[in-house]
Image 1 (tube, helix red, strand yellow):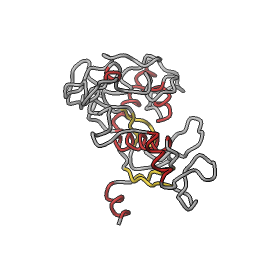
Image 2 (cartoon, one colour):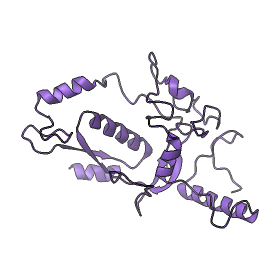
Image 3 (spheres, one colour):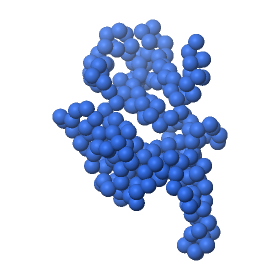
Image 4 (cartoon, one colour):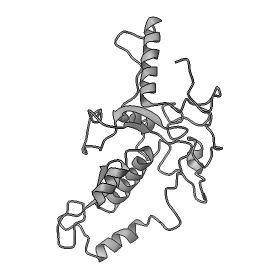
Length: 243
């Protein structure tokens, strides 16, 4: 409080260039000030959301990939252009290389702005792998080395693909079937040609971009019936484990 660490300090700019601890301390200070003015009850506080709370608010009751639908792009979009995302989030295709104004684009159905872009947002949780299955208000790991960030940012590229790649679901399934990687026991997951379990392992890192890529991999592998597990570690640890 009292100092703005941001690179861009305009009246409509977000606050950036600060740590998770700075965000936590800011919330605590605001809580104390509001309680002193009797604007908060003693059992109320301002705090960072858990990752689950952030996801709940971002989705705003929707079941699609984004709160505005399943696709960021429209037919004919090329390069970094993402016409659907443009209306709701600042990303590398519509930002001008600096911190865009807060609240200038459309909100999600609950009236929350900049959930799909602008800057990454700190969450309360430690970073960690999901436990799987159904969970009610999960709080994340008890300890860790990195805190969670969610949301997109104005450096995000909505395409996540190159000219060498395409998503062709029937072709991918047919290729796996041809080589014997089929669902032999009817559980919805493909096995090795000899019937043994087939599980892919993906080494990733505890940062926002790696998390987004892992989510895309998870969705793609689920769609063709392949199990995949993610092992998250810093780059030196991943390198050591690969030897």
